[in-house]
Image (tube, rainbow, N blue to C red; front, side, top):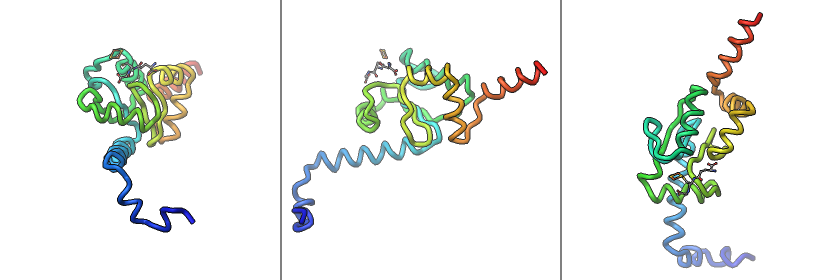
Length: 142
Ligand SMILES: N[C@@H](CCC(=O)N[C@@H](CS)C(=O)NCC(=O)O)C(=O)O
Ligand code: FES
């Protein structure tokens, strides 16, 4: 039998305070990540990104006409480190769709160029504005 099952008290007594703190942070981050279909953790705000990588993600989202929730990690050091641990990804920006980590700037750019981003958004029930543009171009050619 597992030692913790034999003595559940051990579980309560032996876990350090930082364990409870880190699970609380992870819980808070989970709530943020699941707070919207598309969530972006960035440096600065969409109106004023404070890093070129975050700016690139903002531009891509704008091209696709995607509404998203943005969180400025520069305003919250705990979030800046916590989100990296949560997604197991070392840098900012970070994009989540439907609660799942999708990638940072390079991955988003690749997905934008390949058309995968349109598909990923579609899976989340979001119609990319670029999809409409594509359709219009096809209609025009008819
Ligand atoms: N290649 C990365 C570029 C992002 C990047 O390198 N971010 C750095 C500089 S902004 C970062 O977040 N460093 C850790 C930090 O600032 O906490 C991507 O695809 O997203
Ligand atoms: S803040 Fe310097 S590269 Fe992003």
